[in-house]
Length: 321
Image (tube, rainbow, N blue to C red; front, side, top):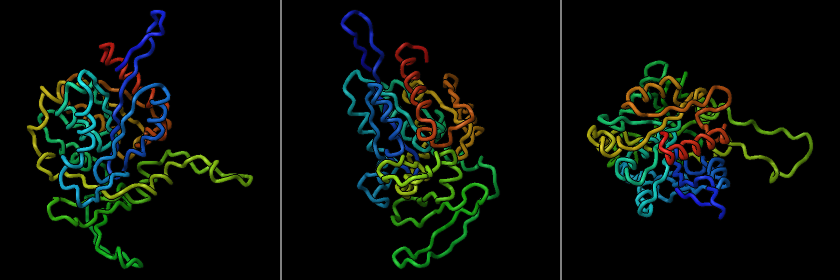
């Protein structure tokens, strides 16, 4: 955090460092609106691609553990100069990475903010947060149906489809290429992305007159469908299963704020509040009211989310969180 003055004794607004952590199958690209707004407000932003995600060069099968997956985030926090503390913001599955970084470097974290995110509790494994998340989603029992892709010889291999039509829709569980990685990677299907994660994404703009494509606004759903990549959840990773990993002296000592997204269909608000209830007293709660924010709140309601993040950071500096 930096605080300067105007030369006449009047303090300028606090300037903070935000580290933005994306969720499953996504990358740093999903923060483009929030990162732009924060930088325009004078704040510093770091938005790493987790290993094997976004523009990160690693292939999925090369990232063997959650530790390796989280390395870009852990390295970014470790590199903070002495005395500097950042606000870590985790979205969705990114909450687990934020918890791990807060456990490793509590002295470098001003606050850990969970935006509709998996928020582990001290004394429970990080994997329990995401496992419970799936179990709590309304719908029928999880079944696997195997089928073959056709029409593409290179991709003609067996996939496992999560047959939960009332929720997972066309999300697929792929075969694991690396036998050293337990579990199976997943890839969100177009219907799942559109109906569960981006259902409030601004629609494509219809043009009544010919217009250069360069002048058309970016459609977030189209962007997501172009950029999402398969990802491992690492729920069977020893680090994710360790119930003694998160301690009161580490992660538990960091100020935590949960931003509830009421219209979230990816991680329903009821489950978000359940994670809050499982955490010790002291977790602050912010709520993005119904009326415009879907699971991808940083894209559907970026202005509101950014205002909340700045207020949370200011409150940490002022000792009000």
